[in-house]
Length: 333
Image (cartoon, rainbow, N blue to C red; front, side):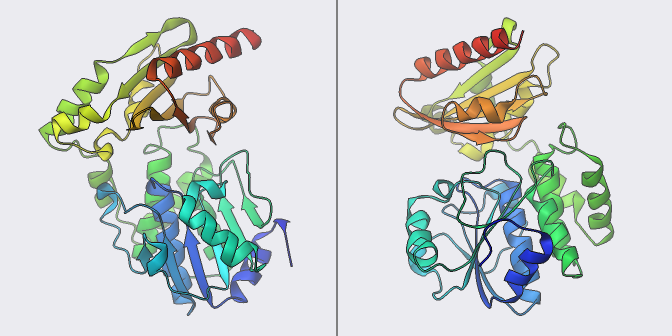
């Protein structure tokens, strides 16, 4: 049985030898996690595979134009007897959630059933699997596109829309530094194949109603700008969402918005998950390696887009971030 880094042809062989496939992506899913999962599932169904998708969380409202079949958020409701697990857009089993992590241990690792990981994040923490990882790809969806081409498969309008969503979201509509030549070439082909760019842009980048503006006003009022480390930090407590009758989805893109200002190289948005538990999202312009930085807090991601979880006091977290950034800047001088 293969283990470690695999070629596309080897991944194809594993898929071809399987009949019932489970696709899993990370909790709090974004456009890449959902788009990659649904596109792969739709394609595998075309190959007469019995395919299901699991995520601990529901599909976000801004992605509800990607209609999903065979999508599960409960371990208890999943079909049984899968013979292949495909992990997409994550590099640590922990990111599937504790229920799925236990499920993977019991049903795949302990039974030595094959596992495939398709991902583009750095600092992979999954070893006991067949890995197809390319950290230079702008999205995991690009890797799914390559796999479909390896099968010489046709891409219909639904698959094209799913894959185009992964590129648009992970490049911030081609504004991020990961917008490489391959991203444009594949996007061109996906639009030709019927990818609905208009729906993607409307749903993902539409401004929303006035309560979203009220939430963002509160968030931006917490702005802390550290000129020496070229960083802007904002946060949101759960009370912000309650007071404005909004949800976490209404604060998507805050960290990205901060790096649009000329003095800012790093945007940080910190969101309260529960009392004394926070999620930090980091977005940058190549000034820092955010994957390495996030790993210091137990997180990870990409050079210009990473994140981590933190348990403790908010002010302590902010001070720790600032101190680490100052140390890193002094080290690199």
